[in-house]
Image (cartoon, rainbow, N blue to C red; front, side, top):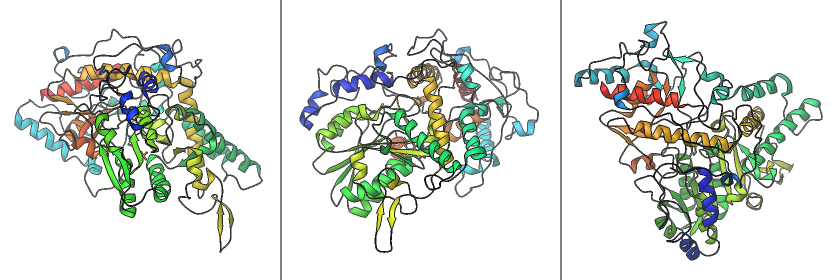
Length: 568
Ligand code: PMP
């Protein structure tokens, strides 16, 4: 498995520059060091490669003086800590019984901790079925049943883990209040990071401080709090600009999240530049947020969606992507990292090929921005979108980056206050970019929180985060391979964060609920990427997904819990 930063360097070398034909030949046999899935590329599937300091040269340097960072970055040495295997695992009793999964937690209230009744059963088929039934009928999980929209969960208390190389994770974990709680009597293990990430204290405090001290609407009033709030909001824009390496703050548009950003591009750029018979090129591994807005556009305009296939490892098949890039292609929209499979796409190569054919590219960065450095100028994407809540910031705030020339040529998305320069009943003129796209009062506190999240990530250093998570992913991948009947889904040579799998004879939901009883939060289901999951003949997977505050010890607990489930 290769590290994202390496990939970035390699792809910059191989990105084609002139025609589609030269684009293809630049990734043909003999190309220096390309991706699996590219004809003649170096598959590089076995094990991790060392990480060279120059891998990071292309990225804006981060402050190396962070207290949570041991000895600066980058570094990724192999650790001596071996994953546990089936034969090392003792028979496990129920949570709280002092078993191998139970790191000292004791239940106070057995009815609350065992909502399904006594969890241990003797492994017979009937017992297994009964276990599944009790889990599936639990009222705790009403929200998994269609039509039931009540909300509300619970939890409380602390835990920490040992550092891998690069980051002082014990120290870092202290910054995340939510991690310090017990769920069903066990320390919470948050492995649902691809769905949303937890927030450091600095983000929570910045948001709260804004409402306690600085709250005002922005841009329009001549008073002190308006000035402060405007400064904080526009300061947040500058932080985002730096975080993704954009040339100018006017290229940064605040939206609600990735979903809204893609809808905005579809309904403004798309409605202007894409017409009947034109083609929008996607991949099988897109999140629904990067499918449905294009379907809306296709219905509205008569445009057509083209979909590039993926192979059995979950990698984009570039040989088949290239011919889909035809004379009618008006836009490529591709995810940087698949939320269901973890695949890191060779976006620089894709962008190079698309640009050679005169086609702009939107990169869905929802799952890349949290895990490794992103530089939109080096990547040369035309649009880049991501969500605040996936980079340890608040929900309800996200970013659309667009090249200034493209944004300037796009009509507004919504009309209202803030985005106008002059209004009469006869004619309205608009602000320039980015305000043209920010109608109404924005999520000012959200931007403040997002800015604090970016500060936090910058203090750790995105290269160090990438290196740490890469080691953790490799450790987890190996550890999960010890579980009988576990089939990994998404085994790309270049991956980030995600460990999708299915288990023979066990529903994904059952596995998810079993893990929950040990305080382990994973996602089970289709992950809003049904075409990707169906490509593997499945309707869903179990998906643990990692962040820099996760530890090997947490992976060990996950693996023991899965061994335990298998034994039932
Ligand atoms: N794209 C990808 C790859 C994602 O993982 C997600 C969130 N799971 C989205 C888009 C949508 O993000 P949001 O719900 O924050 O708009």
